[in-house]
Image 1 (cartoon, rainbow, N blue to C red):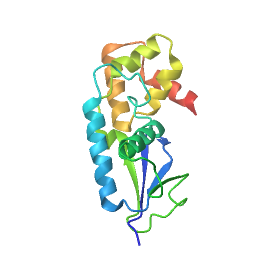
Image 2 (image 1 turned 90 degrees about the vertical axis):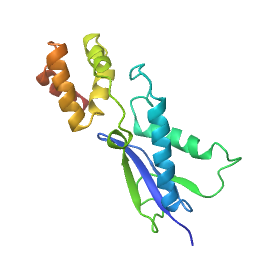
Image 3 (image 1 turned 135 degrees about the horizontal axis):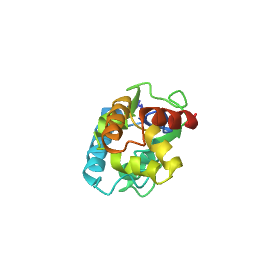
Image 4 (image 1 turned 60 degrees about the vertical axis):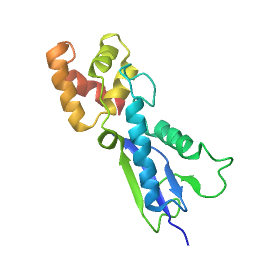
Length: 164
């Protein structure tokens, strides 16, 4: 008996470990949606400063676990982590990959990302650009064409290639 389910957060090509719930069922997905709405509401205009602001899946997973366990004295049996969807039991309600970009609908601070490039913070720039969805990457390229001529589509592609 149970209501076994698993979730995993994703953003671009980065994914979190998988969180399994023995008893969560469909309500577990409600917890995810409520969490993402709270996360969206808490996002400010301060730019993309922290891993949670950049929606890095592993950090979001840690924060989600904090969110759903904050009222527990101890996590005793319902939740556990796995490497992938086959690393535990999700036989009742399946495995769900939560695309943070499309689900959270959080704004992306293109100016902050471009400034990382302009100011020589190439590591942060590459991480931020690699986490953009294809649609966001297209929008970012247009933003750069209109606002920062030194950051061309070719240069963005070159920086992405250096990430591989």
